[in-house]
Image (cartoon, rainbow, N blue to C red; front, side, top):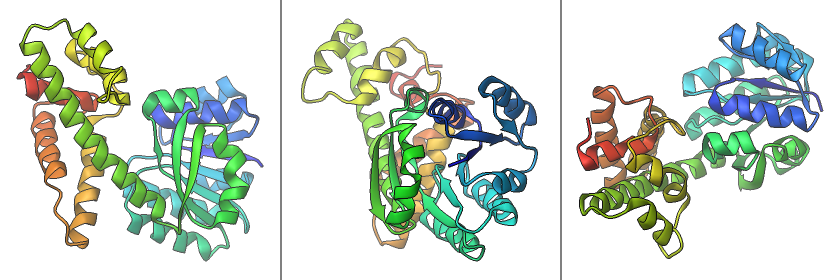
Length: 286
């Protein structure tokens, strides 16, 4: 099926390249036109200046943007161009409510919708190893699966529309806890004058091993916080998690503390760094 990609940031560009390599990508769109034109030239696909025109030219439209409002704006535009039976897959991290709103907008045009947020970071997008948690009709997912498989190593159907985003909220809360634990533990180790590369190697082979320690441990101890996953975006996601938890009558003290910590870092100008910049607070780095 002909596939178009909307949103060519660090995640979207990586996903687009893998979809193109699999032979599915035919069109791209980005608000910054030059970015779309450059990637289109690299991948030998069309760059569109209007998402509605892109939607009219393809069978599957993928969206990878930063915020609920951006996603819904793109969905409104897609609805003006997409034909009946086409599929829209939102790969962004937004609220379950926004996902269901998008599905309703598109259903009026007989366009199918999947909310399919991803996990795996920039590395996963680049290497085609993302995990995808999908909400929506299982038959629609089956139709879109060959395209999604080009950029992922795991695709799990979580339930109806909105279930994908609910699962991603679980992921983001867990990522906050892992960030807190790893950054605090490594700051503790570094304060004792331990050889941190050796600390990370030995702990990485035991019960406390995790992806974040492996991928970010050494860089954070060296004071390097290149994203990765931008701290300001994780803050945005955790605010969504807080809202969801409140609606369920739940408390999320770890999430709440991480939001506070991120807001302090953002106020100091570190919002565009990787979430491992939390280490700055643990080590009181400037």
